[in-house]
Length: 95
Image (cartoon, rainbow, N blue to C red; front, side, top):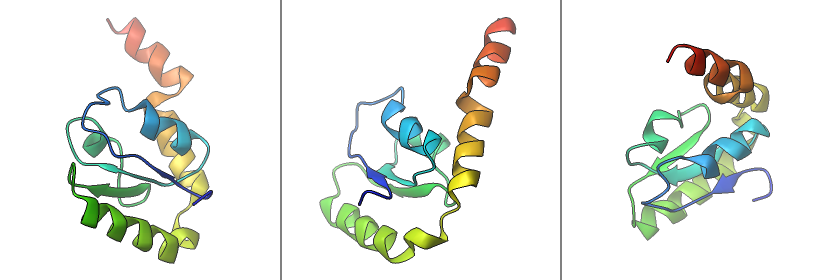
C-alpha cells in the first residue's frame, strides 16, 4: 500500500501519523476517535473503530479497490489549509 498510509492507534491525539501522509497526497486509514475523526474525510481516507481488526482489514481492501479515485492534490490542499505553515501562523497570532 505505497499509495496510502494505514495507522491503528487509540493514543495519537496529535494526529501526526495522519497529517504527514496527507501532506504527501496520500489517503489514510486510521481509527475514528477524538482527533482523526475531525481530520480525515471521505475524500482523504477511511475511518475505522479503534481496535476493530476486521473493519481495519475491510478498510484496507476498500482502499486498494478505490485508490485511483482519491484526488491527491485535494488531499494535500485540505491538509495545508488546516495544518500548513500559513494556517499555523494564523492560529498562533490569534492567541
